[in-house]
Amino acid sequence: MKTYKYITLFALFTASLLFVQCSDDDDNVIMQETCNDGVLNGDETEIDCGGTTCEPCGVVLDFSGTYKQEDQMGRPGINTVFGTEGFKDAFNVTVPSEMQVAFQNKFEARLLALNPGYTSNALGLNAEVFTTVLSNDVLWLAQSGITTYFNGTEVLTGRALSDDVIDISLLLIFGGADGTENPGLTSDGVPTNDVAFATSFPYLAGPF
Image (cartoon, rainbow, N blue to C red):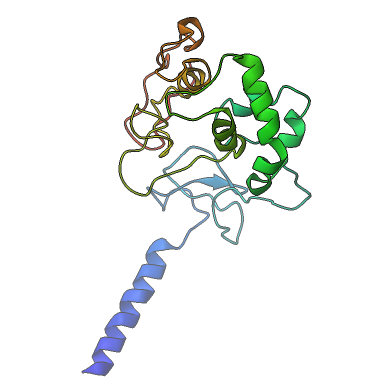
C-alpha cells in the first residue's frame, strides 16, 4: 500500500513539473507572466524565456554599493518646522535613540521662537515635554485599539491615511491648552486630498 502511495505522489509531482515548465514556444503556455531579460513587459499571457534556458521572471534588485541616510521623517513636517536653525542636515542623519539628547533643547528654543506665548498644548504638554516627544522622530504604533495621530483622545497611536498631520501639528504648536488660541495658525487650510484614497492595498491616492 505504501508503495502505491509513493508511486502516486511521484506521478503527481512529475505532472506538476511538466505543467509549470516554461518554453520558448510563444504559443503553448498561457495565463502566465511574461518577462524579457528579467523585466516584466506587461503582457500577462505568455512566458518568453528569451533563450534555451528558462530564467526566473522579475526584476533582480542590486543592493551592492555604499549607502548613507539622507532624510528622517518618522512624523511628517517635524524637521521642516523645527530643523531650521542650522541643524536640519544633522537631524536627518541621526539615529532616533540619539535624537532627544542632541536636539530637544534646540526644538524647545524653536518652539518658543515660533510661539513666544506657549505654555501648554491640547495634550497638556509643556514646552520641555512636548519637544522631548517631538525630537525623538519616530512614528509610534499601538498594537491594539484606534490608529490615529491625534483624534482628541488617543495620541500618536499610529497614523491613519486620513489624519491631517499638519493641522494636528499646528494645533499643538499654536493652539494653546484648549486648542483655540491663534486660530489663524492652527490649520493649513487643506482639509482633504484632491483624490480619494483607494479601497484596496496600498490605499494611497494616485497622483493628481
